[in-house]
Each structure stands twice: as structure tokens, then as C-alpha cells.
Image (cartoon, rainbow, N blue to C red; front, side, top):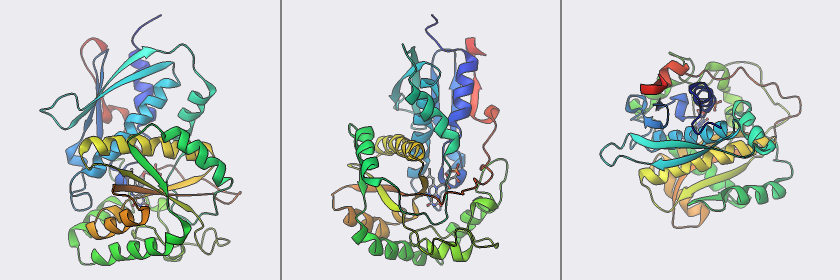
Amino acid sequence: MSTVPTRVAVEKAVELAGHAPSLHNSQPWRWTFDGAVLRLFGVHERMLPATDITGRQLVISCGIVLDHLRAAMAAQGWRTLVATFPDPNDHAHLADVRFTPSRYVTDGDRDRAAAITRRYTDRLPFGEPRDWAQFQSVLSAVVAAEDVIVDVLPGSRRAELARASALSASLRRYDADYHAELHWWTGHVVADAGVPRQALVTEDEHQRVDVGRRMPVVTGEARRPELPTDRSEILVLSSAGDTAEDWLDCGQVLSAVLLECTLAGYATCPLSHLTELPRSRAVVTRLVGRNVFAQVLVRVGTPPDAQVRPEPTPRLPLTDILQVTGDAG
Ligand SMILES: Cc1cc2nc3c(=O)[nH]c(=O)nc-3n(C[C@H](O)[C@H](O)[C@H](O)COP(=O)(O)O)c2cc1C
């Protein structure tokens, strides 16, 4: 049995992992493979400096793609050994991934990889997540051993969160750089990146989701009219520190959370506008009641039964995100 995966196996996994969500679909990652080690780099040119001032969400997005890669390789019979920040002189070099053959591929491994392309960001209102108590137990088992804390926002705190969401929009009303960036990245697709029009919502739909990020709105017939208000649950992912290591960890846990939600049949929407500005971030931190750094929130709910999945948001071609070198080339 071979002790390293083939180039084809790695290409397949990187392609699948590339379906990971990222801030405004910026896809700020690049991989290299030399036949033994798969290296992950953050791409600074794909950072959104007016929205993501410190590059925190760039690293979180890369953490998601890293965990997606792990899931994609597991489904092909490979375990991954990940060393994060392997080069102290190069902070863009986020991880080195090595592989060992696994003895068995479980149905769970296959299901998790299949969930990668089923997941998408849904910005419409959700119904209450079905069997939520049971799901919470599954979720705590999935994220139990991690440094990232996942809290469920108590329903009694929702109105305050909605006010913090509105506050973040007001604080940004005159931030021309933020708006220029938002309009550049959303409402159309340029070179296979950005949020396409069909993924956006109308003004009425935005009004029904009290905690959504204000993005350019579209026109069209009201979708999900049977849901006058959003009945989602809100997960808050936080970490004890606020370093690049914490962000990468947070991304990996966010990936696990999103895939687990997808497996349970839930719709999801990551929310980060609430943690981009210190004032609204402080509110989120206070609402979870811990001395932590709130990183990202996720809206989770049950979509109506007759849900038609919109056309998938595009992704960069494999040749733009993977470079194969040396012996593997
Ligand atoms: C770190 C991060 C922050 C995000 N923030 C938001 C947000 O505030 N509001 C939103 O509607 N979507 C948000 N998203 C979702 C992205 O816009 C979405 O993943 C991307 O457009 C790709 O689309 P897909 O998830 O449907 O594949 C975020 C995603 C990530 C990874």
C-alpha cells in the first residue's frame, strides 16, 4: 500500500475543499504539493482591508478550507497530520499537511465529504431548527476537545443582538471604503470570486432577518413568505486569544460546525459583521457571558420543505489554487 497519496487524489481533495465558504467568496487560499507535503498559504491580495482590517477573516476562511481538505482526504482513505504555522518567518504559510493511509473509510467520512458541496450560505429567513436539543449534543461532541468555544445564544438575548447588528450598519453608514469593497465583491462575480446576485436577498427578505449583514439588495418576488420572521438559532464561535493561531483554529471548528449542520439538514449563514467593529463585537462578547474574543456567528435553521437550492456560488479553478511542484509535477 502506498504511503503517499497520488497527485490525482490530492487534486481531487483540494478541488473539493475549495468549496469552503470565505468572506464575500474571496477564496484567499493557495496550496502547493511536492509529492509528499501539501502546503497551505493565505493570499494577501485576496484580503478585504476595509472589512477585515487585521486579516482575521482571511485566516478563518483558510482554517475552513484546511478542515474541508481533511474531510475530503478522509473520504479517500487518508488521515492528515497538520502542522500549523510551520515557518516562523512566513506568516502567510499557514499549514503543512502530511498524510498516512487510514485503515478504514467510515460512512461518516463519506457523508462529511459529501456535505461540502451540499452546504451553502442561505441569507433568507429560516424556520426553527428541528430536533435542536438533540443536535446540540452532537455538536458538543464534535467540538468538545477544541480551544474554540461554541455557544448557543439564548433566545432572550436575540433582540440585543439585532440591535448590535443595526448598530454595526449605522457605524458604517459613512465608511466609503467599506461600501466600495462590499459593492466590488457582491452582486456580481468577477474572475470566479465574489457573491453573485442570486445569493443576495430583497429588502423585504433582509427586513425579516433581524441579524443579517446589510448587503446590496436585489429585486424579485418575495421568497419564503410563510416565514415573516427568522426563527433561527444563533451559534457564536469564540476563542480565548485573538492571534492568527486562534483564527486558524476557529476556521477549522467553523468548518466542522457548518458540515455537521448540513448533515443534520439545517440551512446555515455565517455572520461576521457583528465582530468586525469593536463596539458590536463587545456586545456579542457580553451576550455570551464569557471573557473571550467572539470571532464569528452562524445562523442555523430549518428551511421550508420545498426548498430549491440556488445555483452554486462560483469557485476559482483548481489551477488558480494548487501548484504541483518537484516530483509530483
Ligand atoms: C469568515 C466568513 C465571514 C462571513 N460573513 C458573512 C456575513 O457577514 N454575512 C453573510 O451573509 N455571509 C457571510 N459569509 C458567507 C460568505 O459570503 C459565503 O461563504 C461565500 O459567499 C461563498 O458562498 P457559499 O457559502 O454559498 O458557498 C461569511 C463567510 C466566512 C467564511
